[in-house]
Image 1 (cartoon, rainbow, N blue to C red):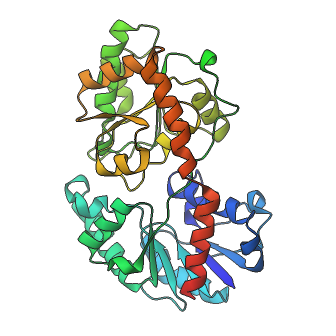
Image 2 (cartoon, rainbow, N blue to C red):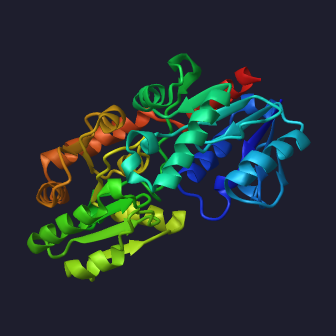
Image 3 (tube, one colour):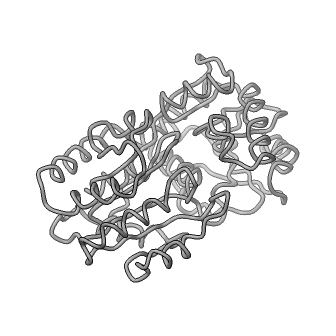
Length: 359
């Protein structure tokens, strides 16, 4: 069987969906069941195939970008590849395609909270995702919460949706060592307004008055709308020597941060899964999150839950986690156990089964 894949998210600096697709391709390379099938990456530009050399992998390219490329060029690439099915890993897919489509919808924040999006962008996302979900042979999502949201907000029958949990990537360089930890608070993920980075910076400022040796590292592309300038927030806070923001770092540097951090904060109002707190747990870092249904589903008893993103609550929670305590030890142990629920190998196996059944 030939499986075409919309590979746009692998171009440039893969984050979010790009990392999801990268982990799937890597895991498929280790699956005996995947060895009988061919995978074809379809993209506007070439993708380095070397990380996936265990797969029978080829690529087809044609220039273009955005929705126009997806709707007009991608179906032609799929046809030229003589594929049997198309895997669309990033919310939308061609509304016409010569083969069945398996579409992944990671979350429907654009439908649940349209006020978070510029009206034109929100309308585009809601329209294309809804129509794409109707066109697809199967829809995959990352959690039971997201499945319910897709049914409620997009009208997709629940029996057409497969829930496949993501894996927990182990990005730290070695086994976690409590003695090497710095009083470092870490945030990793794209910057959206719903993730309350300004409140995190203010909460850290309050924390730093009590623990002046503490530092905050923020890693993620700035996608806030209306636009928030993290560097200005940091300068205004007066903690520019202790707070650093970087839009992107390579996995080696990210692994070093996971290996050094003592606490992880991810204060999101809405997610489809929320991967980076699991990465922190795998690295032996206790996490602080907002108390939401998706957070409870994914992190269980392995997180500190805040009722709202108030800086005072953030500061108090982080101060507790930065000091040795029974609570810190319990959370680290619970986090290590929690991540055992999530496996990229199982995610890849189940995804492959859905793709084969969609043919």
